Image 1 (cartoon, one colour):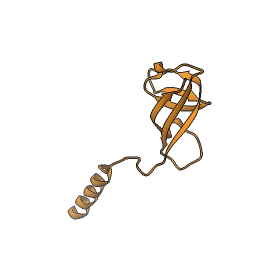
Image 2: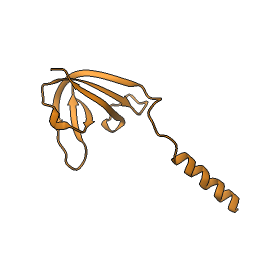
Image 3: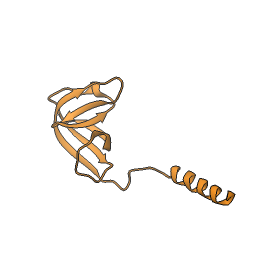
Image 4: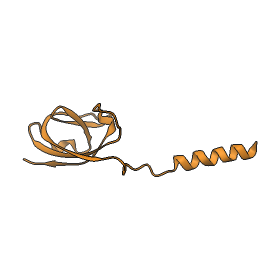
Length: 95
């Protein structure tokens, strides 16, 4: 019984310590206009580019109406656009 518990514990520890990178997910880019900015001090700030939400850190760098290029990774295989499933790598201001 101790061997089964020990083996199970080792498996759980090894799987939880695995490298959780997004190398197998595709990087995408989107160019568009900043249509809305939502500043939230409790949760994440949200930058809307052509009405699609992106969580960004430096929200004060952006203004509504700016053209931007967003480089991001989608961490899900579904077609639904959910900001929590998007990892923003870079936002470049074009204008």
